[in-house]
Image (cartoon, rainbow, N blue to C red; front, side, top):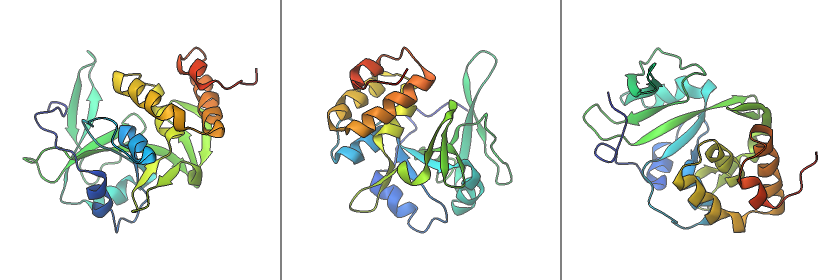
Length: 209
């Protein structure tokens, strides 16, 4: 099965996600570009999709909460082509699988992607560098109408690993609104993964050597 694209993806809005997970027995946060816009309180660009961060340890709760939904997770083959595979109700997705796409039923458009986060107790660990860890309470923001999202220094760290055009756009949109502490955290975290990352010079924070 092919990956979601503009022909088969109709993402939920953040408010629809809030309503969908209003009684969920697990924590969730909107991630990606939407997290940046929720922090800014305005729409800065069109969004192709919608990412929802949840703890990997909560994946069974999430699967059971949407028990009638259709889920497929992406995997690359030996030629680096991405194919979707069904996530069965009794299946545990391990670290090699970063997330899974969701839709109400097999003939419906894809609605969002769960991004599975490495969370133990009250500590969040960055997928690409386990030296980067933050208290769970410090990765969360919330709008006045109850929409949870990843704070920009966490959302941008995840984007720093990809560096698509939309990631660059989101970085430049939110950069003027980041506090000194947010810039310092983001710069420190990025430097642990990528010492020559081009965002470091723009964060204008002196790092300890």
